[in-house]
Image (spheres, rainbow, N blue to C red):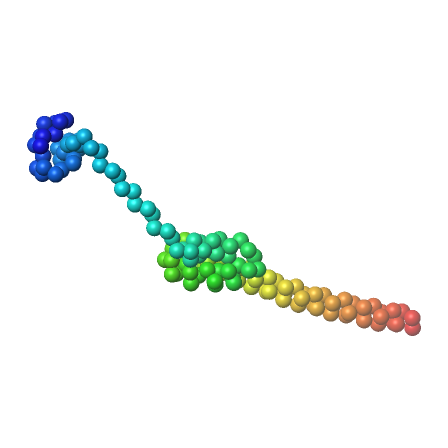
Amino acid sequence: MYCKYCGVEAANDNAHVCLSCGGFLNDEIPQVVYMQQPKLPLFYKASFVLGILSICLGPWGPIIGLVGLPMAFISKRKSSIIMCIIGIVMWVAIYGALIIASHHTFQNFDHDLHIEQMIESLQQQLDSRQDM
């Protein structure tokens, strides 16, 4: 069988495409078979969503991140793993900073209260000396 485009003889009589020019050897156009993409498992998508939610949902961030982290490791999706870890670390750091700040604020409040009591007692002592 000869190619009608370039005239080269086909190596195989059953060939559909010319090896020289890529043209079709017969008038039949072969059907193209499209392969379907495999459906992704649910945990593959869920780990990504939980990674985003762990960053966005404040107080629930570490809990959601801890739930999503095993799913991310199973799906081997690096972006999900990174987002879950960022969500956990970020919110734990924020909670830690809030706890330290509140502890420091209460200490200063107690210290200020103690100073106010000392000023009042000194005022009372001064008033009692002036009355004498």
